[in-house]
Image 1 (spheres, helix red, strand yellow):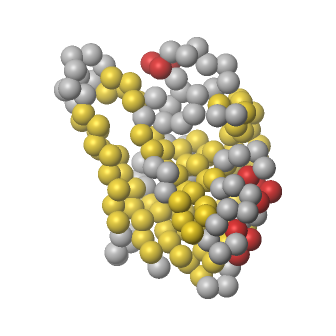
Image 2 (cartoon, one colour):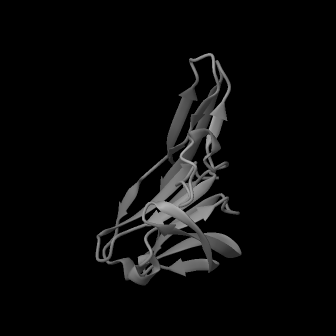
Image 3 (cartoon, rainbow, N blue to C red):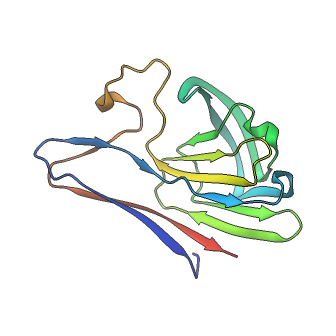
Length: 167
């Protein structure tokens, strides 16, 4: 576990007398001095599925993304917009400078999805923990049936959070 960290929490309360659909997520961005100087590290080796976006919607297509402890960052990874990982099989991800070492670690016990995003040539990388995610291209446009939507019973509260630790 991380010793010194910033905890970002979302508390959602349903004050109504009907079930409430909702989703939450973060959009933290981190300064980088050239994307190619960085990698993302996760504990273990994973053959992940990247959910491909079409505009702001999930297209229904996936692509293999091999994450063998590290994923070197480069603009080409983001040519199809964000890397969207639904139900990532890991709880922590580390942004690492290739020569200087770890910069920060993000950790969550219960994130539902993770978005990793930047623009070509931008001096930042976004690592976004989500509880809910983009709609599909063939959406019914009914919020209640949206994949990844949370349903909160009347009078209930849900707390979701992630940790950020600087190294």
